[in-house]
Amino acid sequence: MGFLYNMPNIEGWGIAIAVLFTLMAFNEFARTTRWGGISMFIVLPIILTIFIWPTTAAPGNEYGTGNWFNWVKTYSCLAGAIGFMAIRFIPGLSKNKYVLIFPAAILALNIFEACIRDFQVYSYGAWDGEIINQLWMMSGSWNIMNGIAGLLNIVAICGWAGIIISKDKSKDMIWPDMIWPWIIAYDFWNFAYTYNCISDHSFYAGVVLLLSCTIPAFFIKKGAWLQHRASTLALWIMFVMSVPQFADKIAPVPTTHDPKAFFIVSLVALLANVALVVYQFNKIRKHKLNPLKDEIFTDSKDYKLVIKENT
Image (tube, rainbow, N blue to C red; front, top):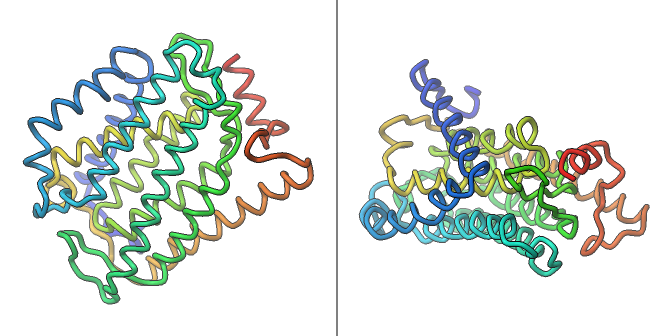
C-alpha cells in the first residue's frame, strides 16, 4: 500500500488493528443487546452534543471537524442507526412497505452527501493540493469520476421491499437483496471518496472503517451489512468529533499525495459501479422486474443462504 499511503510502523499497525476490533466489538454490543444500542446511539450522542462537540467540533477548528459536512454526516448516521433500531424492535414497522423505504432512503442520502462533497472538492480548483478548511485535499478529474460512481451506486440500490427482521434474539435488520457485488462496489466508491475528500484521514475512515462493517457482513451476520455500516460509521464519526486530533497527531497515516493514486482509486470505483449497474439492469431486463418493487437477486446463492439463516 506504499503507493497509496506512507505506511505506519508496527505501532501504527497495532493502533489500526485495535481501532478495527474496537469498532467491531461495539457494533456487536449494540447489535446483540437492545440497551446497548440505546446507550450507544441515543444516550451517548445527547451527552456529546451538549458537553463535548461544541468544543471539539467548533467551526474553524484546526482539525477540520467543524465543517458542515461533519455535522450533517454525524446526525444522518445517527438517524440511520436509530431508525434501524426502531424497525427492528417496534412491532409492525418491518411489515410496513412505506417504512421499509427508510433504509434505502437514508443510505441514498448518505451516498449523495458524499457525492456533493466530491464535486465540491473539484470546484475548489486545488489542482496541486492545498489545505482547505484545515484538511489537505487535491482537486482533479478523480472527484468527478467518483461523484459519478456514487450516483451509480445509488441507482443500484434495490430490493428494500424484501427487508426482514431475523428470528434470532438480536432481531437484526436483514436485507437479502443487498448481496456482495453491491457491497464491494460501495466499498470501492466509499474508499475513493475518503481518499479524495479527507485524504490524510482515509486510512482509518476508509480502509479500517469499511473493513469493520464488511467483515461482519461476510462472516458474522450475513444480510445485515447496512445495519453494520450504520453502526460502525456512527461510532467512528462520534469518536472523530470527540477526538479530532487522532488521525493528525496521535496516529497519522498520510497519503502519498500522488495524483496517479487519486486517479486510479477513483477509476476503479467508477468501473466497479458501472459494472454493477450493467449487471443489475441486465437481470432486470431479462426477468422483466420492477426495481422499485421487486427483489432482483432471489435466484442467487447468497440471497437463498441469508433467507435460510434468518427465517
